[in-house]
Image 1 (cartoon, rainbow, N blue to C red):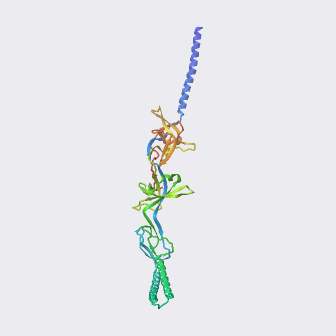
Image 2 (image 1 turned 60 degrees about the horizontal axis):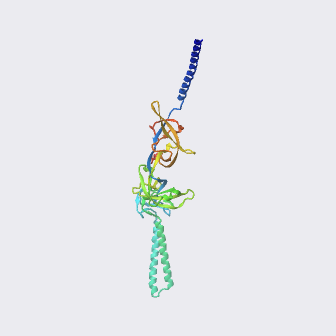
Image 3 (image 1 turned 90 degrees about the vertical axis):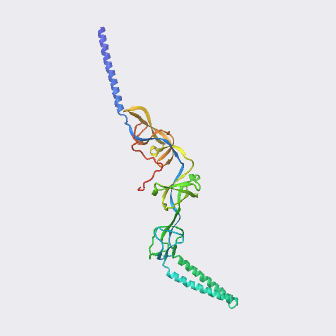
Length: 377
């Protein structure tokens, strides 16, 4: 009896052991299968957040204009008789540039000058006669009026003749000639442009909240797309005392030296105005920031300390940040990121909080504080 009981207990133990062993084996296999179903690590680019010195500045865009500039034309019409300049010449103030055919006007002027001379002779003769009471006061008054009228006619005709001569109203650089010898010109037809290029003005607008940071004589740095590797320095020379009611912007004018005439009126430019003392900010590439209506976020790469396939196990942790000013491709981070944090700068669109990641920085976004735009864009 005892022997049968022992055999039965052994059999029951074997059965239960098999059942429990199978369940344990099944649980292990399920765990292994589920672990194999976990999301694979996502490849991202990352960089360490670090402090950099930023100079607070106001950025604006504007255009260049000449201190003196005009499209030259004549008040009267006529046929071009002589041209005394070449395209691109530098001319002095008062230099003769062009004359219209004026033979008939010159002849009329000569006739009027002769009449004026005769009126002068008659006046002087009658004045002597008046002193000996040989002529009356009325005759002398008539002679005086005739002389004044003749001189006025001479001056009028001289003005008509002068209007047929184009002179440089100020010293400057001529543009491309737009007329030819023998061409008939109507009044007001543009003949050539004249621009005084040194110095040259830069006009731009700033928001009204930035006006208190601007001063006359303050230094500005100007960059032109045509000279991407060069910057030009100038000073603020005027601030408009009126705010534009439609844009709430204020017009500002800076004066730049331009001895080599590189800068031309009408050029588009960007302006940087340094304000205040330099400050240290944690900076990141702008691509690291995910902008959302509920707040701006970044992904910080954490090291779990574990191993996966012989490599460190890295995960992405999403955190909210407060951003400040931007400078080129960079943005200042005021809160949410510490110095030395490894921050995802590309590939975060496929991440969620806790995603495993692999870092590959073979290709990274640009983070230039002063990026330049290619000229072929």
